[in-house]
Image 1 (cartoon, rainbow, N blue to C red):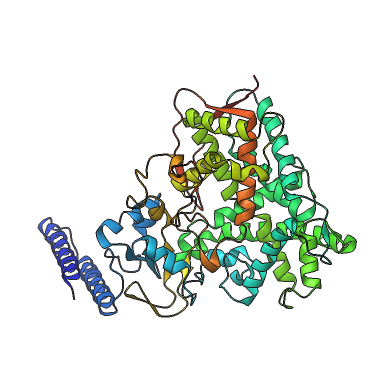
Image 2 (image 1 turned 90 degrees about the horizontal axis):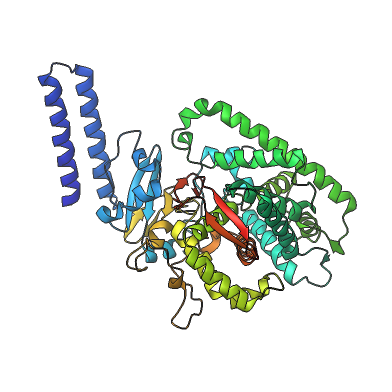
Length: 520
């Protein structure tokens, strides 16, 4: 046993002894309390000894049965990242029944996410993951282990996006344009912004705009934004997003009964959302024409018809795939766009500089397009710097070790939850100069050309990288450039204090901005 473990045990002994003496002095302790303290010490000692014996990553002492849940409170990504100053770039925690290993270094994160043996590409068997998909997390993409069916579902999403730009002969011609569809929604939203009197919070506006885009991509504009069903779908997705937050019953299954009402509500919402989707899916089957594809559901039908699904998809898989696609980007896109608006209000000089670049490249007689993106390096640097500074998903999605393996010199047992701290990576002083400072120029070289370092990974790496990344990037770019090209964003009052709230993603707390036309 090394010195650090001995030191930790010694501190625990002294702490326990001090507590016992204090209680005995005040005559307020009973024998069961002494027994509990002794039991706590013994269990903690055995746990530390076992960690050292198994060459397990070091970490703070955990309480029996509870673990280190204190580190998983509000802004846990900061609490946990700070532990690397004590235990190094890889360390361990305990969360209820789960062993957790946190990786903070650039080399460790890249190696873990791109491991050729896929040792860490599993997903934890969280109860919340099962609740999202009819009691079976393997029906999802983000919650399932990386088996053949999951890979085929990812292939469908990627092929659907690629076919928009390069439709293959005989596979049907797309009768819609993703870019035009997104721009149509953006123009409608900008009109709303211009007509909005006074200061307002843009978050809800972005959520409904994004939802309408996803429903249009899936079902060819099935519901209008003001349709009551759209609001019901919105509530369903909000409920699903809330279920993805850290819930105690993920770590203590015995507490599931406490969350019984919330779980039942989620199941009812999922059933309602699936019912809406099935109605639209059946309508699509009746009107489907393989030579003229209208939307992603048509692309799913031809994907299955041509055998690209390897005959692995059944009705439950189709339901869960559409369910997940409907919620694709629901947490990330509106949150990132809201952050971008907030940062532009706080840094008007950067907003002005970016607008000048767009005026030079795009001009004032048309709107920005995807074709302009390579010629807007400063604008892209602003987007990337907000992504880096905020880091929407500080741990990405939790991974799971699928077998016993060795990693960075330590033994990692099977089923260990692996958290890759992208927050630490994006705020590492060794990799970024003044990482707490907002500075878009860090993504530009000396000639002003866009440069993206390998340690910037907002969507992750490897096999579990987000398959909808291209769609998210496209949507964020188009929304942001159109708004900045046409509008000015200003803070309400003299100072706008941007504060974060970490739930599923690091979202901005509500704030208000004022928007005006650049032509005024």
